Image 1 (tube, rainbow, N blue to C red):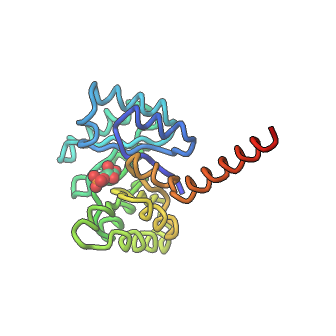
Image 2: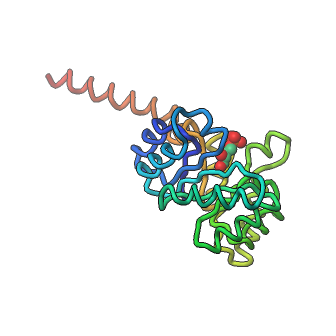
Image 3: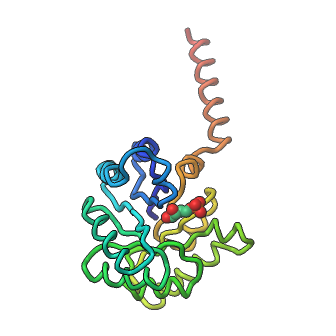
Length: 217
Ligand code: E4P
C-alpha cells in the first residue's frame, strides 16, 4: 500500500521523505493557504522532493474554470495531479482532463455512487474522506470497503486514495481492505512507527548491554 502525506509544508514533507517510505503528497486549498510563498513554486519544490504524484486542487467551481486551472496545475511538473471536487462540473472536468492524459484526483467523495462516477470519468485517484464521515457518526471505513468491492467487480483502474485519515488504525484497516493509498497528516505517519513497547524494550536492551560492558571492564 502506498503512503502519501497530506500537507503543504515543505519542511514536513522533507522530514517524511527522509524516512524513505513516502510515495506521494496531497494538498488542498486549506493546507496550501497556511504556507508562505507562491503556491505554484511550493508545489514545484514538493514535486522535486517526492518524485511521485503530488495533488494540487483547483479552486474554480465551474467546468471552464476547472479546465483552465487544471491545465495550469498540470504544467507545474510532470508529477502533478489535478484535484477536482466531486461535483457535476468536477466529473465533467475529470473526464475532459483525463482524456488529455492529465492525472486527476477526484476529491470530497462521501458515497459509493460518487466513487462509481469518478471511476467512469477516468479518475486516476478517488479520495473518500473517512475522518469527516466518522465526525458525523457514519462509518468512514465502510465506504472504503464498498468502493474497493465496486472497483474490483468492474476492474476499474482508479486507485482508492483513503483521505482524511486521522489515526494509524485508519491506515491498518485500509490496508486490510485492499485500498491502494492512504494520505495522512505527518503526525499520523509518525504514530505508525511509535510504540511504547518498542521504546521500553529498546531501553532495557541498552541498559543490559551497558551493565554487561561494565562487568567486563
Ligand atoms: C485529502 O486529499 C484531503 O486533503 C484531506 O485528507 C482532508 O483531511 P481532513 O478531513 O483532515 O481535513
